[in-house]
Length: 380
Image 1 (cartoon, one colour):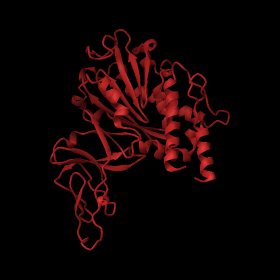
Image 2: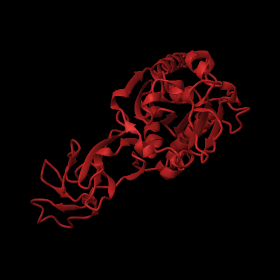
Image 3: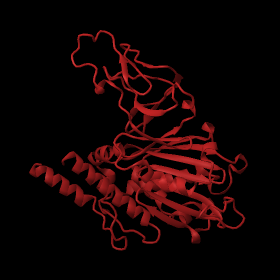
Image 4: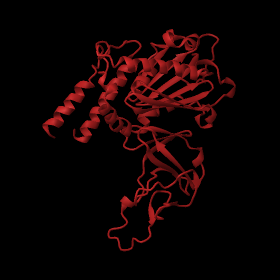
């Protein structure tokens, strides 16, 4: 490692340092939100090593099913392929031919093999290459490099997740959520594409996540939620790679009918707000689930995808999950003004509320740890 590499790593560590004690800590330096070079580093060191949501798997329910997916489109743009073989085993493979890089499958279909349309290379549904014309004279061919790489993959109910180079197992990210909500029939939730929304706005992705992780702003920018939620009993739970915000309903407002097996049995829970590092939000309401995927499009441009899965149609449009468009507009307006404020020559960093912004503090420390771990892995 060169002297310059040591200096770069030390500078990065200093820039992203957040004191572990929230009572004395200052927030991330504003350079994290403004520097294009740090945006590029975050793409590789945070997002390329994280678990990302691939959507539901209804289209690969039958043996012989293939479904192309893209890992975090707009940032990672990694072409993947869900493939269920004749024995019903479901895998996540690269959707790129190992010959010359052609994309293999363009749309969901049924097939016995995967065939490249460019030069006719063929693969089994487990990724093994089985045929390639005009390669009889090629030496040391085929090798395992000619098979389609398998990608780390997992499911919860009908929801799928994948990671190219995961820093931790999937269970470390979603395990607490799946066990806490085991009473929910998540596999029976109905996808509702008509309720899906995509939003784009001019702010750094982390500002949007920070806003999600704290309830401090709710009474000041969300008048509707303030009328629905009992903010005095709003609580936070922290896990190594996730955060849960438990939102309690005011009297008379919609709440879950919780079974005895639920740890919250007897409480009037309006919503379970789960955040999974770095950019996934699973919002459970009495009507079902809203999945939010936050995608950085640039240092100051973000896309958020909302996808809905309905459990109780009769409760749509009510309670904490009843006016998602309005809440989203209010959140976007807030983070966009923060983005503009960060450009001020008179601001560098702030402080945390120990009671309401501990989740933001943990998020900032996770960013620093991921960026530095990536630097160590790269030898920087």
